[in-house]
Amino acid sequence: NAGVTQTPKFQVLKTGQSMTLQCAQDMNHEYMSWYRQDPGMGLRLIHYSVGAGITDQGEVPNGYNVSRSTTEDFPLRLLSAAPSQTSVYFCASSYMGRGELFFGEGSRLTVL
Amino acid sequence: RKEVEQDPGPFNVPEGATVAFNCTYSNSASQSFFWYRQDCRKEPKLLMSVYSSGNEDGRFTAQLNRASQYISLLIRDSKLSDSATYLCVVERQGGKLIFGQGTELSVKP
Image 1 (cartoon, rainbow over the protein chains, first blue to last red):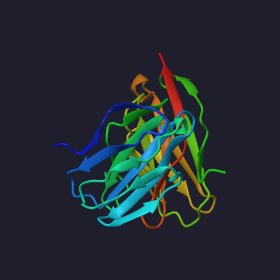
Image 2: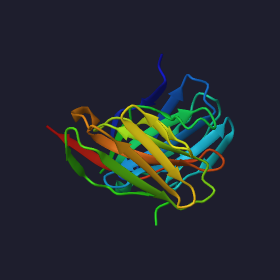
Image 3: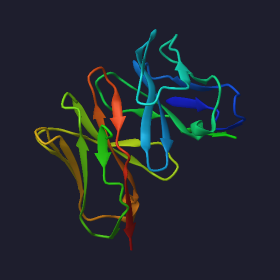
């Protein structure tokens, strides 16, 4: 029972490089989301999706792109990494209206 | 001002103590409310939902006051294993879930 799978778990980038954080869930959840967590800031919502083909911005969307071509996958793209994007990123999913988010284990990203 | 605010703590309490966490939210259209627990460097996990009538799960009691836009979590008879960060979460219309910054709890022997 895989749940929510995030890859990679660790990544180091140089300023200006691009990368994609992958997120997949096998629970047929409609809702998927990406959060970043920084010390003292809690989890801040980057982007979210309520179903395939539908995405919307969260609290801190700048510098990130997402797409939702299937129910299972919700990748997060950094087009030109900046040191301010150094953070721990969590992908999470849930059934709509249920409120119980299931999280991946997190991806620790460092931008030099 | 953040949409969901919590006292960041840390709260340092002895085993057996009762501790209460507070959370306020600014969007009166918020629909559902939750408490999550996060252990160090791990992913958050749902602790309990918060209902208008209040709800209890063992040593944990959650309360919601919609008029004051306030949520609370009470932990009785604290255990060492309760040491973690407790996150207040608010669900807005359309399913968007917003987290508070978390309150750190450290239970000492």
